[in-house]
Image 1 (cartoon, rainbow, N blue to C red):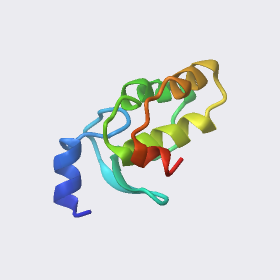
Image 2: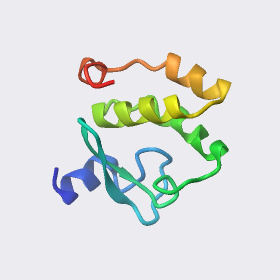
Image 3: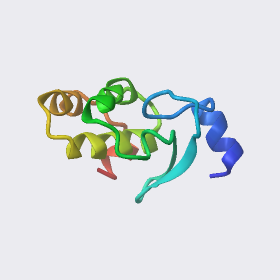
Image 4: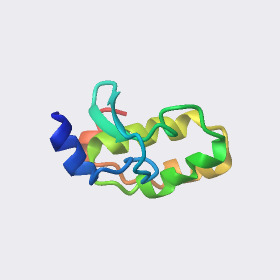
Length: 96
């Protein structure tokens, strides 16, 4: 995916938290690329990942896969609740 296409799809915002600072493309293994900010690309406190509640409703399969995988790494009841409530597209289901 080209930089312009990715920026357009994400409206120039992090596809995890909606931040607009220092966004860059990140490869989601087997799925494609998503746009994330420097905070989400680093090791933020676990509470930062509450932003995934909104991202879990994305219609973009690449984002759905990335959110699903990230939530699976977080050992917190709220993360499991969000993950279990996700409605994955058929494309995303094939990749998780």
